[in-house]
Amino acid sequence: MDIKKVYMGRSVEEVVRLLGEYENKAKVIAGGTDIVIALRNKVIEPELLIDISKVEELKGIKEDEEYITIGSITTFTEIVESEIFQSNLYGLHKACKMVGSPQIRNKGTIGGNIANGSPAADSVPPLMALDSIVTLLSIEGTREISLEDYYYDSIKENELLVNVKFKKPKDNQVLTFAKLGLRKALAISRLTLSSFIEFDDNIITSIRVASGALAKFPMREKEVEDYLLGKSLNEETIEGAIEALRNSMDERLKGRPTLPYKRIAISTILREILEEALVFEKGVKAW
Image 1 (spheres, rainbow, N blue to C red):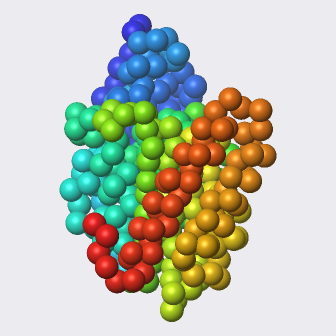
Image 2 (spheres, rainbow, N blue to C red):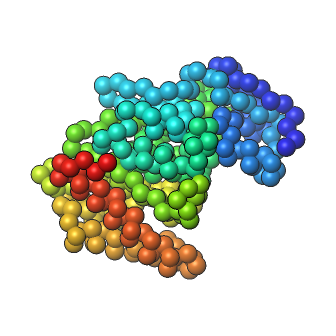
Image 3 (spheres, helix red, strand yellow):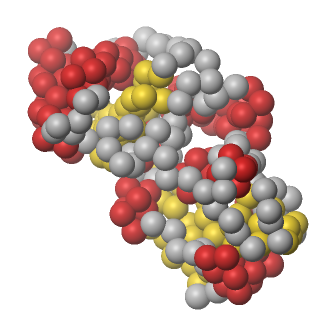
């Protein structure tokens, strides 16, 4: 690694000022679990590396009457250990608990997982299923963008990812998550799915499903959502949802050598997240 300057950021204002000054010549580092590899392999060669790991404004999990807000340098371990992500938000707890090794979870941050842009980022599908909003700050000011749109619009060179937030779930809403990797431990996800479902008298009245590693970046699976909306969950509708996702994948991944494998594998994890939601809906604690 040949970095000309390293700066230890102490405040959001300092970091934003430097990003405005250096723009594409600067990179931000927090946990470093992804960026250090990119630096070693000379995938990126910034003039300035800005360490934001000590910036207090970017830390922690906050809860008010409407929203839960997670600071961008909050670690996966902090999320796993938080009581907020139990019960009907267990899908995010589960996703963060399945990230790498304990050492990676202790260092890796939620903001880094989002900003890195990997299609296999574990935490992103549940956050996307929650219809999360990302807050970005630059010398031009603050803007908020949905996490779904973030991967189309992307972060600008002079912007700092400050936090990610989502509305607190109601008692009849549940977030689920499932992952299929090469190995149980330390695996980079081959496939991930997450669902956020609202039930009313056994009927799905609202649903968002998000996937990882089924495209260039995590995305919503609208065909599955459209199929399940207004239905109850049972063996027939779960099979129908699997078929809807397979049809979408056939078009999206046409000609890819991984398609036959993914068509089979996706049925396992889609069934898992829907059955988890069904157990919750029936009033039995799945976890």
